[in-house]
Image (cartoon, rainbow, N blue to C red; front, side, top):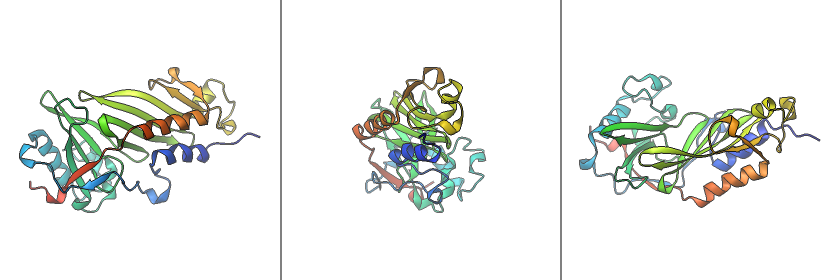
Length: 245
């Protein structure tokens, strides 16, 4: 008897990532067990000017609301800030994630596992590496390893894994539930036929042509392996409310 996926597999793949989908749990995002408010805050005297501008613009955009994505000074700013009502809930930290001598700027809710925004400096210019959004979260691990959990619909979701190398995000692998792809290539005749063994894929690129069909067990074990063999990044934040503009 065929099992329809829709919510079942979406729940499986996202429960492993510890991300909470926009359509569940009152749109909450996960509490962090790997971040702390800083007792040894970033040395502000060494804060690069490029990062100072970004932090100031983020503060000046407060109070954050549904229009945050169109703030002229921060066109790429994560829209997750609108879940926060106080500057004391958001912090920033400088960490050299890829050990290349250039510290990255991390900005996020100090009590969440996900990272809101990540920046680096390349050739003297601040570069925005990613922003978390609803149904599209980034979780950072040590040594620049990054887990991007995302959901397109009830029949499309997945994880993209990256490694930060010399200021650039190198793609590692995609593990995805994609019933639309399964339908397109004839693995199923209708979305209602989707089941745990005919719509999971793995790929070393984002190109659907590179997708290799796998079972749900293999997909879930692969995700768990990435998450269990990499250590969550411990972040000591400086609160935005303590930052002197």
